[in-house]
Amino acid sequence: MRRALLGVVAGAVFALVAASGVSAFWTAQHVIPASDTASGNLDIQVAWDGGTAWAPIGPGTTISKRATITFVGAGSTLRARLTGTATNATAFDPHVTRTISLDDCTGVAGAALPSGGYPATGSLAPGATVTVCVRYRLSATAPATLQGQNLAPNVVFGLTQSSTP
Amino acid sequence: MSDATVATRRERRPARPGRSRVKAITAIAAGAVLLLGGGTTLAYWSTSLTVPAGTVNSGDLNLVAAGEPAWTLQGVLEAAPTTVADPASVLIVPGDTLTLTQDVTLTLVGDTIEAALEVADATLPAGLDATVTTAGADAANLTAADNGATLTVTVEFVFDPATANRDLVNTSFDLSDVALTLTQKGA
Image (cartoon, rainbow over all chains, first blue to last red; front, side, top):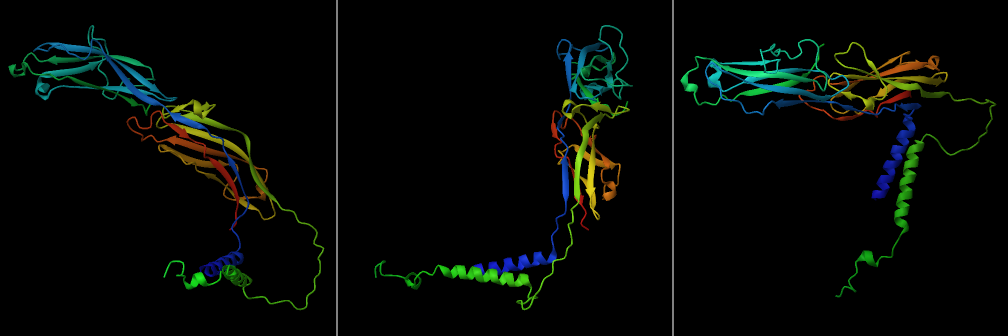
């Protein structure tokens, strides 16, 4: 009985298709032989002169450390700018001055690293290196309560892909 | 009773292999009746006349690439795109536009032929967007008047500039699904 029912249904479908025509027309296709492409890479390397240990800091003194930042990246059009931020333990905030400048810590401080990124005009290409000096200066009037406390210096460098010339 | 003596009526009944075949034939006959639609009957008198109508030829519809595809790359910082010999040789970054340009020549022969040229968007990986434009003729409304015309198809692949952090670095993108399709219009 089931076969009979299937046969009737098939016949009805066939009749319906025959009555309504077909949908195919001519078509031609060309496949463009596109190949793969790949994205680049953006990364940062920071080398601290003498490691990451800082000298003790006292009232009226400045401690500094030189860092060499390397733009590790690849990309046919890739350019980037360098940013840096230094922080420390909150208890020291009112009494500490932090700077990140474009020099090697051997002399007078250079220009400050622009807050909008270095360079201020133009941008860095992959492979570029930038030497900066991070300085912490504790005020001569810092209270004795900071004695023996951890300054906890923390520096974050970033490379951000340039989107403007 | 033993198993050997217990036989159902079905088992005792002689096999009738032709029964299911009869059902199938009946079903096909029912379909054929539906196909005929009941509108015709068996023939009585008939005659025929061969009309000397000659021959009629079909037209043609085709598209072929005219020349090699050309690629350019433009970054967000660059004023003008640069030519790329092979897209596999570049490393794209967010904001980049990788552009493919391909000329195609149309064959459209037929008194009533109308067709449309479309680009089947590639199945793009995340992070890439594609836009397609054509120049040289109205790609959506092609007729026999466009037979032999050359259209320039441009496909722009844009690496989403909103790609943040280090998302999608060192990623391979397959662009091989770009297909141009010329289809006769049916309605």
